[in-house]
Length: 355
Image (cartoon, rainbow, N blue to C red; front, top):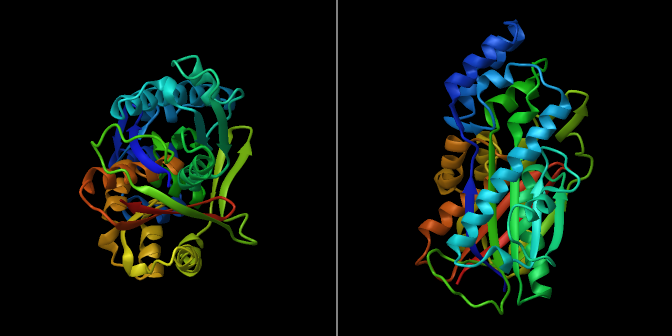
């Protein structure tokens, strides 16, 4: 089976604590009763600090969509170069050794896509296959692993590079004091990650971390949930759309999907040792705990990631996965489940095994 050979992560330079962001919101928006009722969301989010593309003063100023998107391209390219180089060094390979690149992002627009621009920053294989993926939001992280698994089943001698970058802070709009807008300010951050997946015929040339295999995946899109999560593209940029029903959807619909993927591999829930869950928010993690009937402390790596980085959309699950790889080096014959949810509304599950 294909396996995960390494993960690298990176963040932009501006580390900002939650109290500073809360104060910023009070200064930027009019102090209406509506806003005062929403302010507890900053504490309820359980986010302690995050990383942003710019300092808070920049977000308090007016910017055009063109300016914002140009900044998305520049910052994304810098972060992708950083994580790709770091991943190659970590895995003791050259950047020319990648056969295919899956590039995942939903927080900006670029044609040519960022993976093509990356080619002119790094020495990459001139015949590298490019597979950009847009629009999956938070689900994009797990989907990248799933699609790379499918590819490597067909090309077992290949090395797949998965790169994801999300600059959620650039979606901030100074005139959006809606509930979804304020929740997004309390929850989302910026970050990037790169993952190396390799086929069966690629030798293990380093053992710094655990290298779990990907056994299979399950993609699910739920009917009549199109408005649950997504972006509305306006002349000012991307405006977030979030439904209060997301935790309820997680609680009610995820367990049947988990049961389906496990039964397909003749595995029971009590055989899952590692839950690598994308931390969409604290309420989403609690919904996972309730829906899958597992103690919340089994999601501790997801909780810690949420506290220290916020929700970085598709990149976040790789920050969680990195924690598992660093702490499970000596585990063998143990199973894990990696999960993300995103616009559609859909679920992406990947079944892992620590060999």
